[in-house]
Length: 294
Image (cartoon, rainbow, N blue to C red; front, side, top):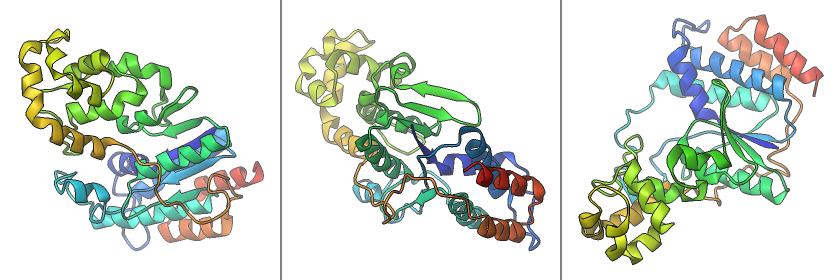
């Protein structure tokens, strides 16, 4: 099994859940670093993976998705400077614990995870994606799982239809039709989650749907008689939304032999960072145990 970590999810969770009264000797908040380091250390100690990598988001300013749709994620407030500082420190924690960390100015963490998943499958491995982001469900194949490590909730490939009414490989079209307010993706006006799943159960894909708009009246969904006519003017918009929701598999990865191979922790670098942020002995002792069991 290859484990792919959606690092930003866990950093934001720590930012909001650990009190910002936790500060370093220079009085900067280190709550997100502490929560993330705790999560990553617990994961490494309990799972002891040999194949693992972490993906981080950068600024969206140069993202290819913003070139397609400038309003993409424009509804989000920019990250505070104190959080940006901690993101950089979390990346150091990741490297020091022996895990490759990936990021790109043009591609998002989702695309990096998709590209890493492709490499894992080339090696004959299934993947476990550590996240709770439904966008990543489209990557799941038989034997794969999305795992929210902190809550313990897992969604397997075969669980997706029960939860969303569509197969994992249909999630791209599902999100394109229903839209996603979190990412400011408009979708097709008037089409919500239930309608999107009903359409894809009937037509299987977005392309098949738009090739058969005259048959939409046969779908078992409220307002089906007029739905085809309502969808027709938004063909280009929905196709554009699909380009936003589709995860790429060609993101640039770190240039070394095996980005997925876990390395021995660099305790010297890790302890120097923990000195800088003022952490005590608990995480240091845990890091030593992780190194001893490597």
